[in-house]
Length: 93
Length: 93
DNA sequence: TCTACAGTTCTAAATCTATAGAACTGATTT
DNA sequence: AAATCAGTTCTATAGATTTAGAACTGTAGA
Image (cartoon, rainbow over all chains, first blue to last red; front, side, top):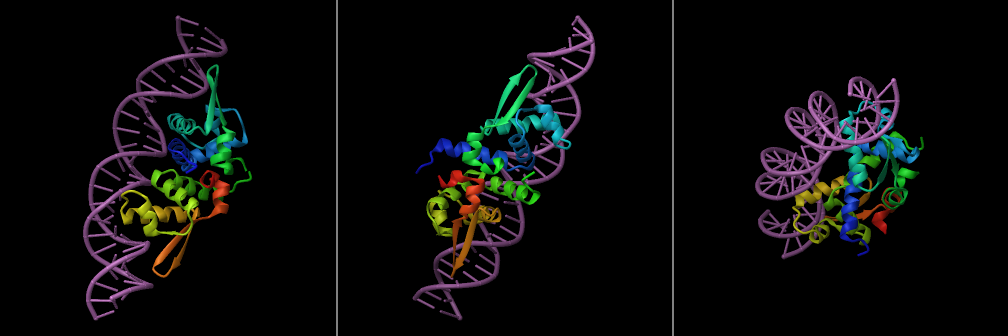
């Protein structure tokens, strides 16, 4: 087969991350607007607690779909476009 | 935005369907070999009860990712390639 | 230094999901 | 008709997931 086990593991994580409405929204937000930080993302979602948002962002970054860069006390998030194209180009459409 | 609510709903269902190891395996199996029927799929997975397999196939078909065609007492399954290309081309790689 | 802000971790509760056994429907074969 | 095979539905259970409050860490600013 063309696919190996590591890929399968990453794919499951990534699709599981996207298979939840709030996280899919976050991914779509970040695909549209780069470099949003934690608070900015939270403001674009209606009523999500900080602890919940943190949990969702962790799953998305753990899957490899989004990258984070720390700048001072802010963390900026971006979609990893190479990964998105391979696994979920719908995000970039 | 380019994405509408219906698309979001379908996308969540589809990614949720793929975000589980057994279902991802099924999708990869079907991407590689077309027209497998229920029992043939079950045989390619190690130890999955029929009721469980039925449940998984329902989720995959409900998401639109796989199609089913009844032929006598058999049901044959196939990946919907148009949907796969848009949402998860990784399956076809 | 003290306060405020950005984000994380801990803990707990409610909900959801995966799983399979048993009983079922409907088509096929003998 | 009776038995068999393909697949579904019902029911129950163990485990995972989502959610948020509270307490926390680290950075920035007054």
